[in-house]
Amino acid sequence: MTPQEIAEYKMHWMSKGAHSVRLHSDLDTQGKTWCRRNLERHQWKMNTWTDNYEHTFYFETEEHALKFEQQWPRFTNQ
Image 1 (tube, rainbow, N blue to C red):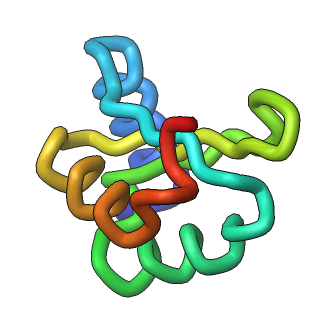
Image 2: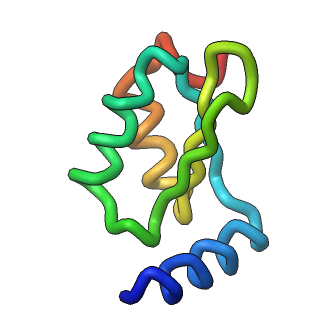
């Protein structure tokens, strides 16, 4: 997929209700690394500083969100 196609695809599934996981900001690099190793670029998105000490990751499927959340159970959705 081209960068434009990826952006359009993400906008489509984000508008239909993405599955979000909040992650402690100290783990942002680990979170991005997990996504890059386990998912395609069009299947996830990250927004930084969505709250104090927190970044939010959005996933196309609930399965991906749950797998991501299980990596750091003490540091997600607090």
